[in-house]
Length: 426
Figure 1 (cartoon, helix red, strand yellow):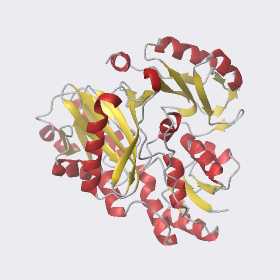
Figure 2 (figure 1 turned 90 degrees about the vertical axis):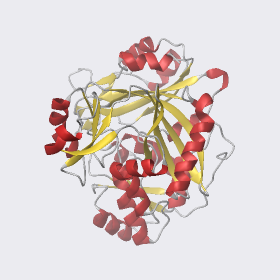
Figure 3 (figure 1 turned 180 degrees about the vertical axis):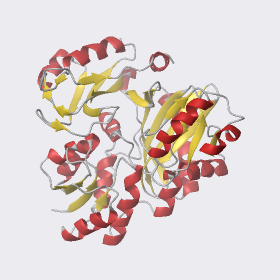
């Protein structure tokens, strides 16, 4: 059986490990956190940081690994390239290409150079904030230059809030400790486009709507797919994505394009040279499309890629149905105990398509960030006219997780009112 070093073990990697299992390829799972859920799935696991290239290479040599996989994190891509280069195994992207898109300063400059529409922004240092933001209208968004997964992103209503957010923003940066990106706030719909590049052509596998709560940092609150913009914007988005791909020189592999659509038109936020965070590669699978995570693993293992229906697939559903990816969070550390049975949920909620639970009953959570950890995902197929708030309320009561004292730990985020209105009004 072939072996691959897998960089990461948080919740979405549980989905990825299942893809390894169907392909009969053994993942050697590496993560700094000993309680990361994918480590409990019965495969070899190691408490090695995913950015510790030296120890990752040593492990790959010792275990005679056939390659390395990085999936959902910008920060893990460079270590993955270093392991693959050392082993002389397959890797989609070269370091120069990846660094252009990991570093948001370089990425935005590249977009401007090739004429791709981006929001007004500035790269600023703390001691020059007043001068640098003199021509900005508030609110604005502060971002680390090289973080990922919405870490360190804050909406600021005035200059004083930018100054207060500065320290927390640079804390999430790997290489930039003295400057951040400040971007104008665009009250628009957010969409993400997942795709696979084959022979320099990008094939879209899903377009989905993303909703984030902004009052306490930027937190994911809801996802629906396919996006309400899929039908009207599909050709334009495909043309835009392919233009960026051609200009960047990307030949093969997974990419994700994040955009905003509002009263000033379409604006590009980021291009990711990887699977999008949270394993939305599954959306294509639920829509009858290709499994690009399996394609990623096959390439890393040196096997022939099964492209499935990649070139002919269009990510839509019949009769205008949509899916909701409803994520159940755990808010505190400690041992967790289920107060539900997955089988009964399907009878209580007949439109429920799939349930993915990432932690075992009785597991102890040691590392829980302030925003919570993803305990489970519920894939729900329905009409856009559904009473979403009522659905979430019912699911929140049905999928209950308690601590040792019977106190509820689980919760499901509800979009803020402005975003909630945009989910169902188009």
